[in-house]
Amino acid sequence: MENKTRMKNKYKKPTTLNCYAGSRYRFSLMVCSFIGCVLLFHVYFLNQSQHSQHAVMQMNSDHPYYRELVEVEDDGIKIPPPRKRSPRAIKRKPKRPTTLIEEFLDESSQLRYIFFPGQKTAIDPLNDAGNESLYYHPGRIWLDTDGNPIQAHGGGILYDDRSRTYYWYGEYKDGPTYYAHKKAAARVDIIGVGCYSSKDLWTWKNEGIVLAAEEANETHDLHTSNVLERPKVIYNKNTNKYVMWMHIDDANYTKASVGIAISNSPTGPFDYIRSTRPHGFESRDMTIFKDDDDVAYLVYSSEDNSELHIGPLTQDYLDVTNVMRRILVGQHREAPALFKHEGTYYMITSGCTGWAPNEALAHAAESVMGPWETMGNPCVGGNKVFRLATFFAQSTFVLPLHGFPGVFIFMADRWNPADLRDSRYVWLPLLVGGPVDRPLDYSFGFPLWPRVSIYWHKRWKLPYKWSGKN
Ligand SMILES: *[C@@H]1O[C@H](CO)[C@@H](O)[C@H](O)[C@H]1NC(C)=O
Ligand SMILES: *[C@@H]1O[C@H](CO)[C@@H](O)[C@H](O)[C@H]1NC(C)=O
Ligand SMILES: *[C@@H]1O[C@H](CO)[C@@H](O)[C@H](O)[C@H]1NC(C)=O
Image 1 (tube, rainbow, N blue to C red):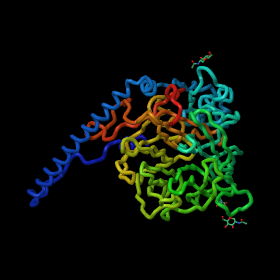
Image 2 (image 1 turned 90 degrees about the vertical axis):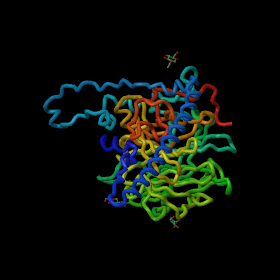
Image 3 (image 1 turned 30 degrees about the horizontal axis):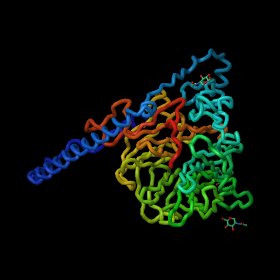
Image 4 (image 1 turned 135 degrees about the vertical axis):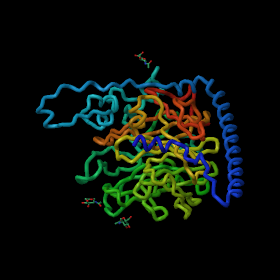
């Protein structure tokens, strides 16, 4: 898998042009020279844009806050040496977890406290005064202003201009984890979509369940026995409505549809409209992205998760149009999170390994409809296993940090399949064009796109006196 990924990291345009073609030699020569000119131009232009990118970063990297964010932080996790086991124990359970991923998935691991720190270390914004104030601690329990763990998994954040408030929507999973049948994945019944509000992105007030499960009607999409994942909300200026899109499925993930709901207020209640298979295709992990020109797009994993599809929504955001492009075909990516910086579109995705963590990839495109190119693994710091497992988390959303161009908050879920309600949030700084940790392998010897980097930090915070968007 690593080999495959490394191949994907390479910029795949052909470097040798085989134009030698017998009788058409002269014509080919002309074509070759023309292509050569175009390539030279391309290289020149790329160098130019790289320089200007560099200039911006030089200005920015003087900022002490940038230096803090891009500091590469290791995480010296050592796997304890295997204990001597009795032959009987070996017979009973022959395989001991040996890799960090296996330790992560092993409920009784001695390293459990590293991945899922206990209640004692919970982040409690109302009581965490002093030096811990405003610090994110990826992986720790995060309490809302009532002192309860935040329930907003697979979530996304909407900044509401009207109330100058951030709203965090996600799966409210505070119920028992169980298996519907032997071959099924771990699940929690649908409870609904949780919503939390904040001005500082650290202190979150529970606004309640804004779209609730349907308990009685078994044929309803939102019946507790079904699946509701990755809810995302955007605001429609024309209709003054808040529109929610989400993944709707049955317990076996065969329905593979998107659901749409609508509300007059960011805090709901949202009215569920319907589910659909967009463009007639399966849709599982998905997200929506609203561009600067207010055109919104749906991105979803399709064709057995082997590719992503992208297409614009109608003006009222309540449906897709009939325009659709297949992207990252054959790459088997899910959990897409889109963002934009200086006119370029970026996306972080994960591989498809159920609740288990895997390697994130960053992708870039000049047009949101593609073509999209895969750049490589954006994770920096931690240790190698951390980087290959996206810090033991899966992407869900990327939030621009207002006032700090090129700085984003990467939001991810550290799923706990043994007890899904206790899944954790991993928020880390994501920088576009930040310093590289190691040179990437590109055909032309320089990167085509500005580098996207997600920096591991045990603790980090937003800039001093950052107080939301004004
Ligand atoms: C914060 O302050 C406490 C108590 O003064 C101290 O024990 C702790 O080490 C400090 N933490 C950091 C990260 O400086
Ligand atoms: C149950 O849900 C289905 C699908 O949404 C709907 O068509 C039907 O009218 C509902 N039945 C009741 C009794 O509400
Ligand atoms: C899911 O699959 C199992 C086993 O194949 C089957 O018994 C069950 O009825 C299915 N459930 C749904 C909701 O399709």
